[in-house]
Length: 597
Ligand SMILES: [Ca+2]
Image (cartoon, rainbow, N blue to C red):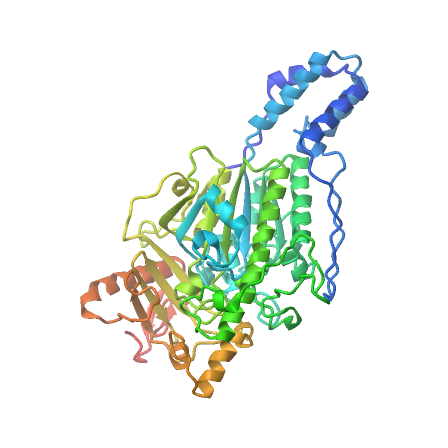
């Protein structure tokens, strides 16, 4: 990917320069009063001291307080140098000058045309959202965001694992091409290739102020570098990912910096909610739903009013068994979703208070499916189908509408670059079917594209944890999905986090004791999968009826398979000959292991 464009920095107009010269001679005290008055009109509240959560090993780091006088919300006036000249030379200026100055400043603010992006990323969040039809889980802030923008009904992750998905989102590159084959932290230790171009690096090179608050979980550092980083590297993950008061204050700090420097910004908020924590911090509950709840020993998050749900009233997803244990697990997830929702509301208020509601593209999505059987780590629908809300402040942008266009998270990098006016080039390749490249979603925000059965998204998964080697590749059109389980003879792996969950333990215990298991699969079916899976999603959204090899769909399957192979070649998938062949000098050589079909 090669960058061609630059973010435009507005130049000082001649008119502006003339008025500045006129103003050199004004009274210092009155000028200061004027600035204070303007500040009052644009003020944001003084930051509160963040509250540490009792029982957490983490401490809340001190934030750099926002300046008491919010001059940083004003245009730069060519920096402190000009301000200093004004301060020293203004004397007895007529009131009309102040009015003119005020008009000038207003004009400059309005004509500045800052273009900013805010990404709000849930961790393992699904469709527990009112905007997507969940009537039980309360998410008024995200629902309000949906009303301000466009809701995508066919949005997909390109992989169903945390680090790999985040790397894909931030590079527009599928996991088998980025080198980020699995989780980044601990013994898993996966990293992207050193020469990969990432969105934050590209934006920084183009003068955009970049920030990440919360979960980063990708590396190496040089490939994913933000100007402002408050992540699990320098904080406890719960403090930057679940303590919504702390997250709010960090956002305020970042926005104050952007305003002070009068820069376009890209802010990526990686919530850790609604991720499970039964594996890492069981004292807070299966989803950390008690963290900061105000209960004894749990600490208090000042901005969070917890919602609690009745287990027998939750809206059970089709891929979760209908038992009390699983329903209680879902109820805990809802409580954590509601904390995420309130965090989203706080960030959006900070954005508005900083004066950027009308110049910022806001995107809400999730890195992978919910952490339940059939969800995260699967390329089935519940693992990769993602909520996606995009709210544009542009005149004419669609609001309170839904789109059925196929959208991949690989599209988010070109979307953000498009928003900032940064053009890129990719090498031409005739093997790629038109439309299979990542694309900007901005045109869809204006007009729904014509319906096309040919639209497709792709997915690629190799690991989650380092021990969970189970490579899969998939192509999904509006109607069909073809899924290739490359090493299907192995049992499908289960991650530590899911294994200890009440839901999976319930499946295990019921299977072992041969008690009824009201689930959509048996455990054996879940573990052992065929090499190829083909589904007609219009008729079979739960993907229970594998149509692979069905004579009436021979042509459909062949087309999907060719398209998937073409995508794998184009993206230089090292697994493109597996499992029936060995790749050598861009050719597949047969292994004669009986897996060619
Ligand atoms: Ca995740």
